[in-house]
Image: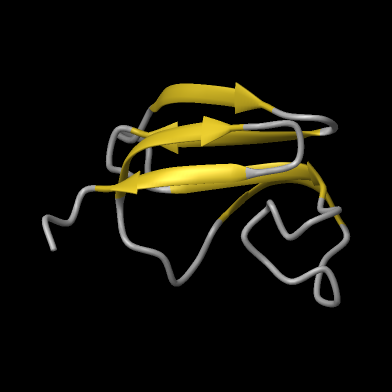
Length: 77
């Protein structure tokens, strides 16, 4: 993450967290019970530190349920 980027939002679910940067990037950590970290369970079941979610568009908002994450894209289409 670049120095001029800052976190503007943080949401916590059941044993995981989601952070949104001022640039619209999404970072996650914690348990990945239902792929809520943005990666398949077969790839990563637990993230100890914040990791950027790759291959998604930039986001304007993040919403978290107990074991789910929803993001609102900055893209207009």
